[in-house]
Length: 323
Image 1 (cartoon, one colour):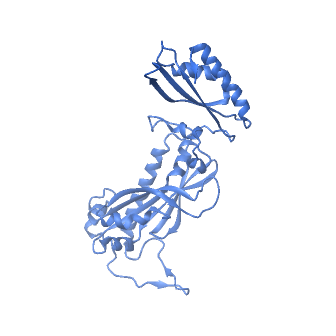
Image 2: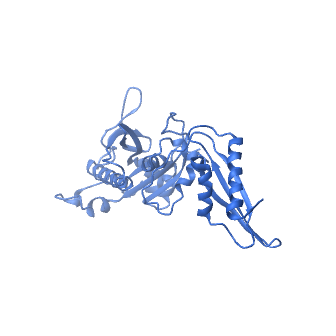
Image 3: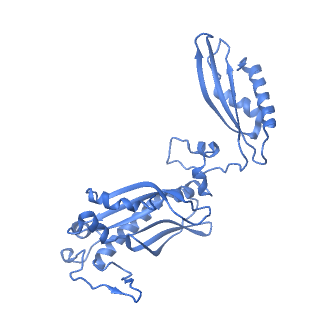
């Protein structure tokens, strides 16, 4: 099981791509809290630059002869090791890169990420505070984490950095002047902020009380998750034959009837089936009613009593025959 989508960088770069997103599920041993889960979805982003893109065509490079700028240092620096054998690295860059190249790529990376989250969180209540934190990752150097402040706490949304040149060499670009950045962001973390979801475990829930809140046509419309009850659902179906004079019951009329009897104990109502019986020459409908209290666990006898009242009222109001 992959622990990050960076595992696909080499193959995708080798295929000829120099700018791409890669999205997939990843698996990790991690801490246990409301923002961590052993499986989540990650979006990997990669952008590569050649010398012309980074310097000649870059509008941010001014007041200097662009032709003199280089991606790589002219001389190779001998690696320095600590007593324990680990490599001593310049915190600002990889030994093979020039500082000018790294700073331009860093600017591109951070401005891209900043603009991305300004757009994603444009409807967030109040000013969204963010910060960059220096860190280390296996496939980038230098590296950073992007964090945002929510209710006084800082949350990491992604890790990013300058791609290790060894990755580009393994991708077949060792003889080509290329440098680039990469990021990996957790999609669930972003959704938690956008929709105000307080527990990452909810993304793996099959509870329709959660799932149906995200059935909408306009994904750009501001939408906040409404917490569901911690108490379990009770699900009952009601099926009936309509009289020969009508083909169906208007859903809104049925919803009103159910709500008038069940009140706030009714969480959801769905039309799950309807058909025409050719021999009986009658139409049939089946509705699924989901009961759930916000204050206690409902017993089946309690639900059955309410459900029976709904059936009886349907017979009275709509002249149906309960199946």
